[in-house]
Structures are given as C-alpha cells and as structure tokens.
Amino acid sequence: MKRYFNSINKVAALLFMVAITGTSCQKRLEKDFYNPDGFTDPTIEGFYAGAQQQLGIFRYSYGEFYHTFRAFNPMLGSGGFVNDGVANTFGWGHSPYGDIYGKLRPIKSLQDLYVTLPENQKTEYQVYLQTSNVIKDYLFAQLTDACDDVPYTDAMMASTGGYFPKFDKQQTIYSSLLADLKSVSGFLKTYTLSSSAIQQNFKKFDIYFAGDINMWRIFTNSLRIRLAMRLTNVDPAFAKSVIQEVLADGAYSKDRASSITLVDKQQDRAFEFLINRSIQETRDLLWAPENMFKVLRKTGQPDDPRLQVLFQPDKDGNYTPMPTEATAVSAIRSSITSTDLSKTFPSMYNRSSFERNLGMLYMVLTSTEVHLLLAEAGLRWPDLGIDVATEYQTAIRQSIDIYYENNALNKDVTYSGFIAASMPAKPSSAIIDAFILAKTAEFTTANDTEKKGLIFDQRYVHFNMLKPYELWSDVRRLKKELGDRVNKAPSNVKLMERTIYPSSEEVNNNANFLQVKAKNNYTTPVWWSGR
Picture 1 (tube, rainbow, N blue to C red):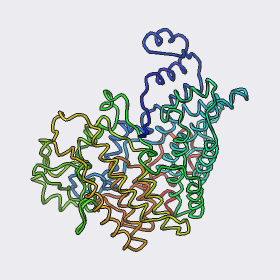
Picture 2: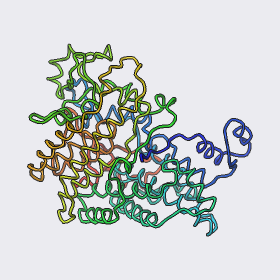
Picture 3: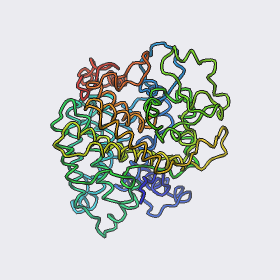
Picture 4: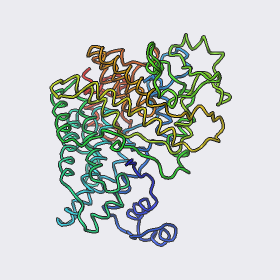
C-alpha cells in the first residue's frame, strides 16, 4: 500500500491556529472553519499538527527553492545554464539559519508544554513528544549540514532567559542527533497506541503517517542511515555501528511502500506556494545538464529509462543537453531558444514531471537513497554482509519506478507548451531489465573506488535538482576520496562548502559568535567532510 504524507489538512491547520489564538478569535474561527474540538488554549495536539504542516520541511516552498536553485543548480551541475565563463561569486539568497529555527518553534513549544504535564498525561502524550523529536532531528541535521557549528544545546531557550546560546560543534550535534534517533527507534519498536482518546487522536493529528507507528520507525531508522554515512571520513567506526544496528533492527525504507514521500493535498494552491513556481521562474538554470546526460547515456549501454521523465525532447524531437563549459555553450548560443516552450533547444527538465505537476511526489527519503547508502556501506565494511551489487541494482530499478509514477501524477495536458512526449509510457520490463543488466555488469567489473563513483552518479541522477541539500552533502563528503569524480559543475563555478551566519549573530550574540567567526565564510569545509 502506498504511503504518502498528508500535507495541508484544513482540520489540523485550524486546530493549530486555535491552539495558539486567544478566545477573542474563537467565534470567528468556529464560523469560518470546521472545528470539531474547539481548542482555545495551547495544546500538545495543536503544536504537533502545526509542526508537521510548515512549508519547507518536506514540501519545498517557492521562496526557499527559487534562491536555492539559483545557487545550487550551477554549483552541483544539477541544472544546465547558458554559461558565460565568468567565475562565480558565492551567495545563497536563502538563509537556512533563521528559517530552520523558525520551523523548530512549534516543536519547542510542544516540548515546553509537555514538561508541565502531570505524570499520567506525560505517558499518554509521549508518542507526540518522541515523534516530534524525529522532525527536530531532521531539521537540525539540515541546519548543521549547511552551517557546521550552530546553537543546539542552548537553542530556542529565550523563554527561560537563554538569549545568548553557545555554538555547539558539529561533531557534538551529530552524536546527539544519532543518539536521539536511536532512542526514538527503541521506543517505537515496542510501542502501540492505547484505546484512550488522547492516543487515538494521535491518528488524526499525525498528518504525516496517520498514527502508523511502524512508518515512524522506518523513517527514524532510514534517517539514521543517512546521517551515519555523513561520518565516513571522520568517525567510520561509529558510522558502521549505526548501520549494523539498523540492519539488525530491519525496519528501514526498502521499497516503494516504505519510502517516505508526500503528495500535496491542496493542489489548487500548490503552484503559488510550492516548488512548481520556483521551477518556472528559474527555467534559465534548468536546461538538461550535459554531465547528467553522461550518466544517463553511456556509450555501449542502453539509455537510462529515466531520461524521458527527467527531461523532455527539444524542438527537433531529440534529447539534447546544455553544454557544461562556456566555450561549448558559445558554439551553440545562436540556436538556444525557449521562446516556444514546446520547441526549445536544448532540452529542458520535463515540465510535466515537475513544473506543471501539482500532484508531484516530494521524495523525502526514498528506498533508492537507502539502497545506495547501503551499497556504499557494504563496500566500506565487507563484514556487514551486504550484497553490494544487489543494493545498487535495486536502487536504480526503484528510482525508475518512482520517477515514472511521479510523471503519471500530472493530470494537466492542456498547459501552454505541453508536448505529448513529456508524458511517455513506461518502458517494458524487458527494456528496463536490459538496462539494469548493463549497469550491473559495469558496476561489478569496476574497482572499489570507481564503484563509489558509480554509486554517487546514481545519487546525482536520483536527487537531480529535486534534492539539492542531499546532493550537496554527498559532493562535500565524497570530495576527500573521489576528488573531481564528484564534481559535475562547470570549471568557473566553485563549490560552496558551507553558508554564512546571519549578521545579527555577530551583533546580538557576539561573545558566542567569536567561537565561529573564523569559519564564517563559504570556503571552510564542514567538520564531517574530513577536509
């Protein structure tokens, strides 16, 4: 059975608004919205639902991704563009620092309220607390991956006078995140909801999984795999131990049913607020990138079936990439056109799959990502007993499946510039099997270093422009071992190693900011990079 996060849910949205609103608003809200419970005071349920509904956690928001595309697509080679050869200057119009702390506020409010509960209610509400910690850990991992050292232990303590939080080392943060996720996994492993009203209501307020405890455990353990593999350069023994624990537990994303994905439920508003508009407004950076085509179309191998759902044909009916380097772009500059979106040159990202697909799958943490991480883990630590080739080929097969599923979710075939070839029929099993066989043969004959490179290439294709944060982390981590093998950017576009802190930190939290001031730049690698 396919599992989706339920996103914007009108009932839950109301409950959160009422939970944090005074009684003066009650009558108006009850008139305008369906409100079955009528909360007028802050509640665990309200904060929990509110935490899950925020834009930008799992549903990529317009503003964040407009700026992220502009910074990341050239840097990661995940989008082609009309390269003029001018060396890039670092910058990112989005600040994950303030943004993520904002997203953490409902969780902090939930936790503050939880500690005030009588002991019997704490037991009833523990599942809300534990699963909210997974969201918290997910957000803090994204924050520290972008910034390195950040306030963690003392973060969000203003209500108790903690206005000047210290910056925790990334090593400390990662140790804490992985310990916390292990604890949550252990709690969930033997947990079942009781028949009490509070526990049964968890199914209603859990917008992501509708109270499915097993899916929470799968998400928690899959996140442990992702974060553990960040540490291969700096603490490989610990990374290996985490992978061993999760493999022994057995609950992690293995297939489509256990992949963590989301489909927005208010698709009439999706274009305005979500990633679709970002894609439309950054088409100039979303030409089909040449370096991705080198992975999708290898000499002597069949074309990757994902080619047709990731990209769409150009004006001549061909799949043609935008060259990487400025000199090659100059040679075709007079032919480049997007005046008619049904007849572009070169090819663009598939508009039916992405830009115009209001039912698009948000691939939060899929089985493909997990299988590729486990393939790498098996290479690094053969005694784990992982069948590396099987993990690799399973990852590719499941990526093909989910991208064709995503393409088929688009119901609009009347948008301006639509071309029928942007919604192709899924290739036959025989065609996919032949492709998988060729990829497996290439993989099994490669040495271990090249195998790591081939695994990265599959992450590059699977993440493409949809998962820039995960691709960025992979590039920075693997750069130590694989060097330019993971560099898909043009030569004039340099890798941003981290983002900078808001200037307000130096002004308002100067004593603590001095701890990190020397690293407040775009070029110092983060701790787990090992560089």
